[in-house]
Image (cartoon, rainbow, N blue to C red; front, side, top):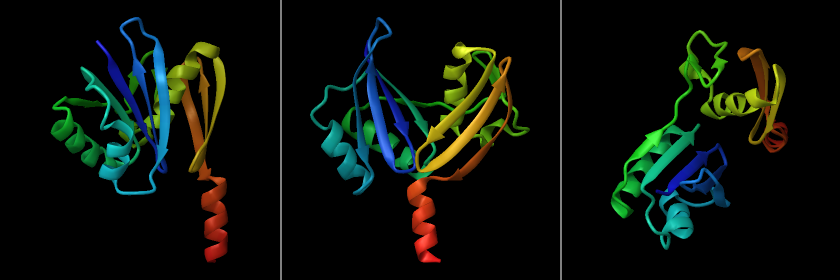
Length: 156
């Protein structure tokens, strides 16, 4: 069974195939420089359909369009990953865990394997910094990324 893993960020779509053996293969990325349908058609139209799709998205509108595209083109269901209060050895520091971006949640789960005290930096459209101590999210910060900050300064 092949699973398509999708990370839909604010400006880029990233994906990779997960094999039965748990190996990642054929990772790729595409910028959102066109309509969702155009981006997906260009990236995936010639691919064989996966048996399972897992999506981590910080863009709700894109998630809706992606789910529709997958149903129409491949007829496969989509499982959307959400931030949780607890899971995989990590406890969210948010009173409302669903408000923590799923990208940050998954990064903390991955970072948990690197030690008891971890600081996670993610530099994308936004710069995020999160601290994890003994599996407990201590909090974090979010700033505009370099392009977003530059654009906002130019616009006044």
